[in-house]
Image (cartoon, rainbow, N blue to C red; front, side):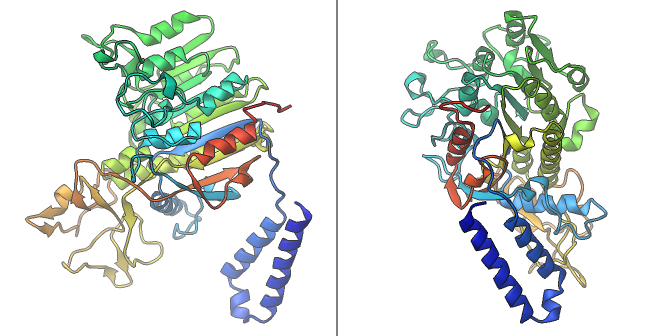
Length: 495
């Protein structure tokens, strides 16, 4: 800590002590007051983080806006005996020392999509909705992308000799993971491109296979984009190619393919091996339903990826996406989104501990953020500790709206819930309905078949070398520039 910082913190503490002497005892002896003072003293002792990192992990909670985060914090807290109401609980990443807010708009959209937002985070350049790691001077659906290609931080890291990995609970060819390696003007071209493109651009799955020299480990869903369509197959490729087999055949001694959790657990980390894991035809199962499958959890996939990436001392770049927070919201089922966020929290907690045990935590910049928010909101004047998935309730029981019916804490501004919310213009009565059931769909206002993204800012949490560069309100593409600076990608010099 420099002398100026020391002076500022010392002055703050001196003023706090002086003010405490003239405050009433019931104020200074309050647990809230004392916790606040303890936090200030903790911060005052915290050194400024070193500016250069050996490793970076970018965690993306797809669709994890502030309201999702707050609700998930309470949801997790209420499931633990030592957190009485849930409100005082902290998710693992909420305890990181540095925070900022990011503006999420795309260059052509006020409310963004994941392709444009992730492109901003991994290339340093904002672009149009629906486009992956290409500039916005071309249009969505353009075949020619060569002149518009933007190099991603993952590609840059691989070029500089770092190990790289991509983990997602969504299809690995879906927007967020695909933005790290693919360059294409339409996120929908996962397994094929229009015939009139005439070979000018390759589909996303094909780009992943051909980019395999740059990515050491890939784990997620989306097997269908790599296999041919046909009888008995779930594949969607129309070119009759089996990209999984092609990927293996390129270097069979150095490539391992797995498609179940048990097979993944049997892998032995080897820096000379590359790994491709595809555990579902499309997106992986929601965490709430995963126990009946042979699919690994986000925590297990991340743990395996770290084993491989830390197998040598070259430094690593890892992107981890909790992709189905977003999908739970689109379905209008808050419990799906919250359980996905809980698993995301557990994954980050496990990662921090694993890095600490390996003595690599101090060398690693960890960034946790979201690509965009959703239109879920928290409402009502319920008592503290009220079940976050329950009906709004006060001291005398359920709070009734002007239509004399109860309502839930969590609801959506739009989405499929609205299709059943209103019957003949009247809101459905939730009395006697189990609003905490796994399949309960929250009531919504505007009827849509799928709930939409929201456009407000999202949070960034960071710890480790370079984390101090996250503060205030930033554009989303700023994340790339912090990674670039901290990893010295334009002149790798970490020793």
